[in-house]
Image (cartoon, rainbow, N blue to C red; front, side):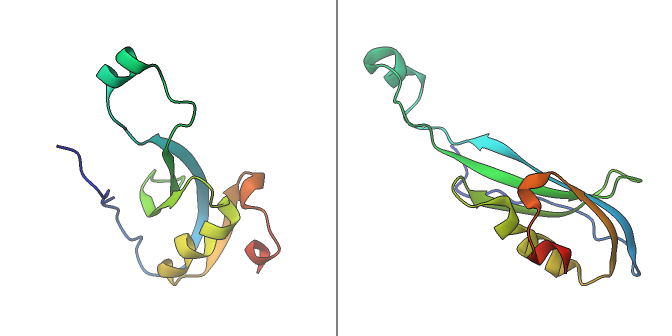
Length: 106
């Protein structure tokens, strides 16, 4: 049986300023009808997947925030949802260009 949701357990950093934070995302495959259907009828052209966005403390490698989004949601749209619950001042945030937007610099 497969789960409908994913719960990511992560540790909140100690109180105070977060000096460095690394943000990135990766794709997660959503399984469909299974391998039998693919063998019998061939592979579908469109794959269904989700994106897992993580905010990690590079010093401790602790995941301090996580968010799952649909495949068509741009990374820059997820950044506020990912970082706002931390409610802390951030020093440097390292992310790839997909997270770069005017709002991310505020």
